Each structure stands twice: as C-alpha cells, then as structure tokens.
Length: 242
Ligand SMILES: NC(=O)c1ccc[n+]([C@@H]2O[C@H](COP(=O)([O-])OP(=O)(O)OC[C@H]3O[C@@H](n4cnc5c(N)ncnc54)[C@H](OP(=O)(O)O)[C@@H]3O)[C@@H](O)[C@H]2O)c1
Image (cartoon, rainbow, N blue to C red; front, side, top):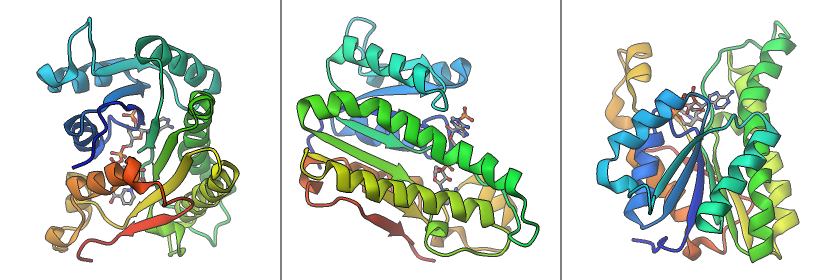
C-alpha cells in the first residue's frame, strides 16, 4: 500500500490492545520499528510473537528496549540506540493511553493530573526525543492516537477528555512549528475500538459497529506515509459504524 521500506519508526504503547496490529501494519509496509517498553517481559513476548518478521539479531527489523516514555532522559537514550542501529528516526507513532473515569463535578484534580501524566507527558516526552534526528534530516511524521473525547467532554470522563484535548492542542502547535521542516504532526481519534475490555464493559452493545484495530492501524500507517505530506495539525476521527 505505502512504501515505508526506508523508514524507521518509534512506536510507543505497542504492548496494548491495538499495538501488535499497528506494529504488523508498519512491518507489512517494510518499515523498521523500535519499541520502548516499561515492562521488558511484555516487550520480549511481543517481539517473539512476530517470529521471522522481527528480523535477525544481526539485521533486526524490530528493536525492543526498556525505556519509560514518561522519562525524557530514558527516551533520549532510547533514540540514541535506534540511531546507532539504523541511523535514522523518521516516524514516531504514539499509542500510549488507557481509560480512567473521572467526574467533572467532583473537581478531582489529582485524577485529571494522573491521566494527563499518563497520556500527555509520555507522548510529549517520546515525541520530542525523536525530533532532533527528524529535524537533522528534514523529514518526519508524528502520529498520536487520542480519542474523540478530545472533541467534546462527556459525563464521567472529564480527565480523559481534558488530556486528550490537550494532546490535540499540543499536536497543532507542534505542527505549526514544524510545517516548514518536512515534519507533520497529526492525531487519530478512535471512538470505540473493538476489544475484550469494551465487550465486557458493554455486553449489550453491537461490537461490529466499533472500529477494529486494523481500521485504526490503516489510518495510522497512512498518516505516517510520504503520501500524507499535505496533512498536518489535524485530528482524524475514526467513528467506524457508531
Ligand atoms: N479502546 C478504546 O475503545 C479506545 C477509544 C478511543 C481511544 N483509544 C486510545 O487508543 C490508544 C490505544 O488503545 P489500546 O486499547 O491499545 O490501549 P491500551 O491497551 O490501554 O494500551 C495502552 C498502552 O499504553 C501504555 N501505557 C499506559 N500507561 C502508560 C504510561 N504511564 N507510560 C507509558 N506507557 C503507558 C501501555 O503500556 P504497558 O503495557 O506498559 O501498560 C500500553 O502499551 C490509547 O491511547 C487509547 O486511549 C482507545
């Protein structure tokens, strides 16, 4: 579909629900993918699940290293390792997130801040660590998976909506700063993704209406492609059939 055979991707949040599908989608387009993980055992299991697709120790197509995206120094060191292996970072794709309910009316600032730390601080750290090599080459793609909650707050999801909205605004600012440097920055906004947690939480819903991991991955890969050069500072809702 798209030729990413010369591209090195830093993929954060790869150990979650959609991570393996997004990882395989990048590999299917020929990309090399480097994955920072908090939990080395999860990272090893993810790499082993790929079999030959991960390449060989002499010529890896997937690198997995322990590095906490919340720690800027750790992410700088991670990017140095990627540069030593492949000499470039072209794409950073952020899947980091999760869901935590929090009411607006309680004014639970600690809960809002915790979700901000999980969603925004991590993605800002991971992305900015990748910018130096991107700027040096005059090429880059930043794509972060946020949520349609960024567009409109809903009851019980105040902190989630606030953090996702903050990620959008930061991405727009980044896109504006980088628009003459060959680097784009965009968000992808799923509404609901079909996974076991959502099926358990919403047993009466029809999961065939929800976006599949493959549908999210296809949009992430497109936004990462050379062909998406005209797209920057935007947030793409993926409503699927809801
Ligand atoms: N599921 C949905 O219906 C839905 C809807 C809209 C938007 N989204 C968004 O889509 C994205 C992907 O969804 P998903 O279902 O694959 O998410 P997920 O299964 O919850 O995966 C979350 C990923 O983020 C990482 N992570 C969580 N907290 C972190 C932290 N503090 N520091 C570093 N890494 C952290 C996790 O790493 P560990 O393995 O180390 O925990 C994991 O790799 C998420 O951002 C989610 O918010 C999901």
